Image (cartoon, rainbow, N blue to C red; front, side, top):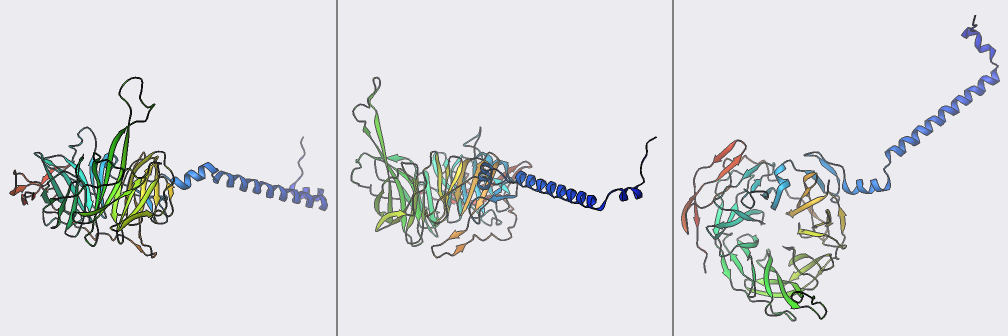
Length: 463
């Protein structure tokens, strides 16, 4: 038979010194176990150096409509956009509280542009022609295309307001490659390139009527007279000053030893970015050394800012004035795979570089790289906004406007928008100039919702 001592008689069998020793050992074991658990928990939470760098730069994967970690600066956040159609954007124009998007796919370029309001609601723009160019100027959104071979420009109404008037349609003297405006003054750069003078069209009535203006060709030392001229950007200043960004390109025979054993001799392609500033057709041209093209042009203070990639893969900013040009800030770090570049404001610069965002918020004084929630495949910018198409979907980033004094500005919301009662697209149904009737219609999953016929007027451009 097994004997078991009662608990009340077991304690006296242990002497006081031994009992105290056992309690001390038990306390030490408990403290050691707690310390080991705490160390293990800290190591499990703390990321490695590689993970911390990636997590700090890239941020967490954001859900639709939710902000991710800070990755665009102190005030910038990537916010996921809910519309899946934005992931297939081929072109985009950004106003402060609206987006105009041209999709790509099997039907491109005949795919219908989509106009998004501040709430993210979209309406298709139907037209009897393909709209292939999108622009933003002075807070307004524009679309351009050719109707029966004739270039047309459509100024769309604000989608955040009930459209009391139809879209404004203008017959153009040329197909636009660039558009800018302020107040009643609007300027268009004509697409195409040639050996003559650059072609520009000017409007002094808010974009209703455009006329070609005679420009002189830049005459620069070292640039042959046969160089091709291409308009890459235009801008309008607050005082009515005009700026135009040109690319002059020409070819020369290669040096000795560059001729292959078979085929013609190699040629060298030269390109130089040139900026013209002035009023009307009286522009003063200046070369921008190191720049082969200009990606963005905006008014800034007493002059303009031009942005472009230089030959060594660095972004450069130039201050343009009628009395001369000069560098602004410092050049960016080198980029192995440069992409699209934008001036978001008077001091805010953003560009796509190898799937990441290259950013400066102070006019090029400090540059930094940031990653969106996923590798960026396409970037669009303007009006202190960015839209990045990534492998995780479309994301948006917004910025504060900054001045050299340190003051900041924020784009105010459009207020409580009323739901549009009719879609915004209006196009002429008739031919030629004069009165015509257009129809605006929107297509969605629920079908087609046409509007009432609206009278429009198309004027012939003056020669």
